[in-house]
Image (cartoon, rainbow, N blue to C red; front, side):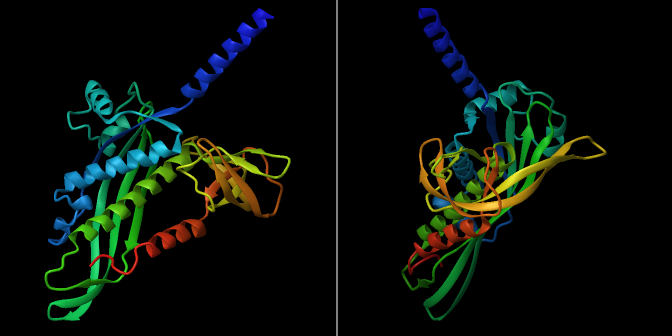
Length: 314
């Protein structure tokens, strides 16, 4: 009996170790700021900062938080990431361009590296008025060119442009009244939206949301929890069919997919979520892929816009 108990404990330890080892290590390289900005935008960086480098650092912090919330990756600390790149002779700045990423070979201590550049960032403002009084509306915009590189092969796993915009509520400008703080807030909000979208992109490619179990009462259990999924959020569920391969490179391009239904999140825990059925065309099965529905994402953004109230950004 003692031997059986010890064996069971060893299996638990080994299994726990394997679970942790299964997590990919991901690190963020320096995100470059390449957006062209007009004079007014230069004074409106997120959190009121003035220099592009500081706004870029704010974005890296937001992206780090967004990825951490997925609980699917071991994040390599920024300082350690810089040390790894320096050890591998990738340059003191830690910035890797696309050409060097393709040929860098194996980098120890990390599985994936996030590279990118903020290529658009600023406010579009329209106003009407007279004298020292005006009423206007503004939209904050950001575009990030992001690449996810396999540190072991040097190949680019993901290459995409993520665009986000956020409308401010109507604003009023009068003599002696400044809204610089609000300007910084709307820009930081759209920056955070972009960071969350990039985290979603990484997750859907490397660790997609999956159905892990279906209870006898019909509750659908998912492999993501609080922080990444929210109560009331709608997801589309897809069955995975036969895979298809690029005939020239032999690379697996993906699988045939078929939409089988829609679910809504009913409860979120630290590491998993519960969902209930909305519609279906076939029975759900363990292992099916889930994606946040476009309608649900749009609804979340609309709700966020309404929270801004009457006075927004000028």
